[in-house]
Amino acid sequence: MKATTANQISFRQAADELDLSETMRSLLLTPKREVQVQVVAERDSGEIATFIGYRVQHNDARGPLKGGLRYHPDVDLDEVRSLAALMTWKTAVVNIPYGGAKGGITLDPSTLSTRELERVTRSFVDAIHDLFGPDVDIPAPDMGTSAEVMAWIMNQYGKYRGFAPACVTGKPVEYHGIPGREEATGRGVGIVTLKLLSRLGRKIPGTTVAIQGFGNVGTHTAKFLRDAECRVVAISDASGGYHRADGIDVLEALRHAREHRGRLGGFAGGDMITNADLLSLDCDVLIPAALGGVLNAANAEAVRAPIIIEAANSPTTPEADAIFSRNNVIVLPDILANAGGVTASWFEWVQNRQHYQWGINRVRQELDRILGEAFEQVWQLSSSRQVSLRTAAYMLGVGRVAQATVLGGLA
Ligand code: GLU
Image (cartoon, rainbow, N blue to C red):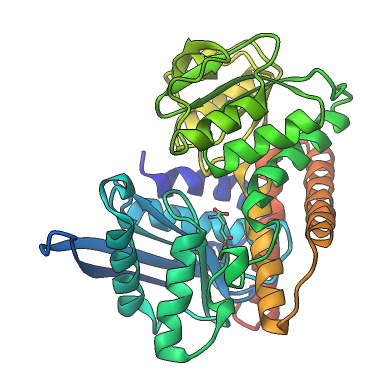
């Protein structure tokens, strides 16, 4: 199933609950603008390399378009389109004044040198600089991109438009970024996990957690939950997984990854398992924090964790979602679970526009408040309407975008 089709299933369930008209449905499902551009950059060898870049601007009824930029070999128009729509619902669920967009370049960043990546990024900005900006569309990091990439974007954009740090978020703290943005997605995953555990009446200390993915999101989630006295029993990355029933020493794993170019390979603090083993581990909470579609019809029945927190975007296919609902597995959906990143992006954007800097405590406090409110609203809606947390989150998000569309006078 195409990624766009999969996400539209959740949209339709929410639209039915909200009793949205056909006119409104097609207004909300149709992307505002989709662009595909040629990205040409010189290799270190002097050869010329050509890549394809995308930016899909899905909906700006609630504010400027907002969403990450992904560098991955699987990036294509369908994936970017689906992720752009996800951003529209995500910014609406947490009620921050943005629409939704997503971009990407089809490439494997591990095959490019830093200088090559910089040239590719600048070339992409050359191709789309007319289409984004502080009040129009604000990119940010996603899979395969980093604060460094965001710095190049701001710098290249400045060559056309002058100083405009709010044209992109997720920048290095030393280059108009803010403390707390980098940790925010993982921290947010941790915050809503604790809220869900409390709402379910479960004790937090000793809760066993398995995390797939040890990149920016997985590492910060692991650290936050460890600090909250949960027991992280398994972690993994592309090189494989590690399991320890008594709990992985998360700080040791972080140190190992830091010393091995971000990789867990060779970590001695647990028994080696595969990524597939990790997903079916006997634990309280399963957190997919890497690729999309990892929980699917082929493995959903094998999942033993009663709670899944979607730290990645679209980790659960609709087929797996149906199996989880039959098996009473509770799924906290991506558009709420990983919304901490874009929420902190908003803080960065606000500060850039005011030329002011908050401290880390204020960033964390505001993040906690916004995610806490969104979680409560989703939880209440899910209980009062007897729908899944995913349908409730979509109802909240889609409902807010529909309302803004009506108030703006469009429908
Ligand atoms: N890429 C992140 C996401 O999927 C962050 C987007 C942003 O900060 O704009 O939510």
